[in-house]
Image 1: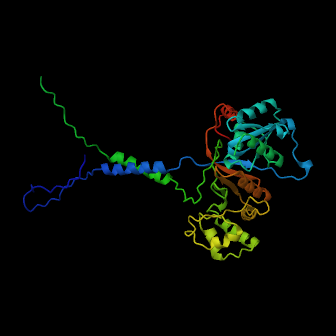
Image 2 (image 1 turned 90 degrees about the horizontal axis):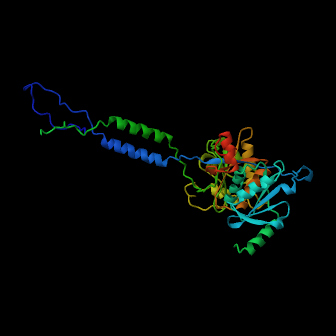
Length: 177
Length: 224
């Protein structure tokens, strides 16, 4: 290792009277400095947040009171997805909430795709209705699912009391607390 | 056989170059590191396939914590807007806030509002250090008749008028839907139809529709 020369000047060679400056080696042992440098590098690598949070855009439709201004959809082309308690999904096709079926966040993809294939693309609409028991994560997940499944038209709508009571009855029958 | 004498080489290496590299990297990482401001509200955000980076300027952020409490904050670069917001709310709701109390909101870079109007004066009269660890009630949003976020959003929309306002919702995984619904209602009441949800990026699952579209167009993640 390179070391700093700190030893004494040694003997005078040029005889007495001639003073010669001590020749110190300029080489310094850099090992500890390098150690420290890499330690700090590791620290900063670990603390740097590499993945920045992303943002999902959402556009809300305007609430219209007049029925003639509301969007009309064919009931046969509608898939309604209800978000229930404990990450359970209920869904039905068309406009009959009594035909509700149970699903989960993994299986819903196939259901959406299946419905999409069977329906005319220009009519196909997914209606999302989170219940008050659904979590925020559920809501974002299902919105993300719409992006993943490339569903062009979907709407988030408040749940109707009829649907909610059906879900509650189903949950009771399935023993969901 | 005669012994082959290997020339003795010194084990000392010149460390200067290595040292240079080490400190170059060090300075890069120090400069590149962005320290998060101390976040008083710990929120676990859900994940999505969206690849758009969340904006940082002109942000009005609505935070929903895991208990479903709602907080309102404005990015610290928009100080003039913060002043306008707190002034507008003060006048609209007759809160009688003093200049000092208003300054607590507008001058503090990490300030956020997490109390109903009724408690706002006492909340702002305290020093931010005193409020550390104190549980706040959150802005009431669940009651449709008493959704106080509507007033906050109206003040924010007025303050950002003419400019761009990025509304960001940052919600916790565990919070329930009614809080989110209340927040959405507050946006709708003010005709603020565009907003963004903060998420953690995840890769698009293979074999899905979006995956196929992205493969065909050569893009990554969701485009919007």
